[in-house]
Image 1: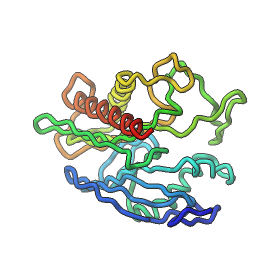
Image 2 (image 1 turned 90 degrees about the vertical axis):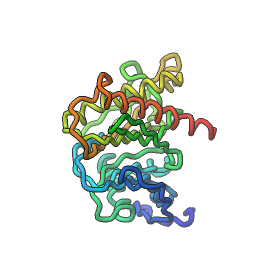
Image 3 (image 1 turned 180 degrees about the horizontal axis):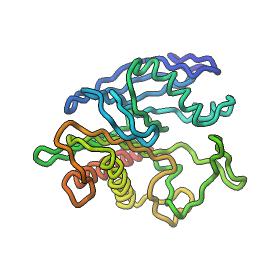
Length: 272
């Protein structure tokens, strides 16, 4: 049965805007949560619209010039719809996002992240020092697919765009830590790539502080989930070349991410 106000042809992942919830403007970035539908399931997207086009680095789509960054909640029920198509998972995600963008962000150049976490569970944390500022926008679900990288085994292999699960493995349930970091400083490609190290280390520090264990081997502390995503969005201030923990910008990034991941996990935990 279709869930109002969503209706969809099962062969078309139609997305219809059902509400808009402004969150405010932060350093010129306008934030809102947009309600819409994926298939016939209610979903929503956190939209961060930049004051002007900017080159960003996104784990899902790489290095690209965008006008907005979107963190998209896809309800778990919609994830299995790919089984009813003849598309690879990569083709399916591109297809469903293209249909969604026609409604949520028509005509915009976007960077995308996606997750099984509702956007009302997002948190935003800001760290500042003199003229520098860093924001971390985080959603986090770790209950079902937290893992310790390098110790927990893969559940399948990708060949020609198709996921082939190993016979002895069940596919992981939806759960993702998505992190969008915005900085006041301008960053080149190398610094953006380097920031992924700082962000990942800060995320793992938060998981250790919270004593999050692997969903597959509870004796092991988790380092992340199997589907984590990152997007780094530089600003228009002075260009910085170093973002490791030994420089102030790197410290601010790490503090914002650690606080953000901690708060996002606790926010979801408080609802269970």
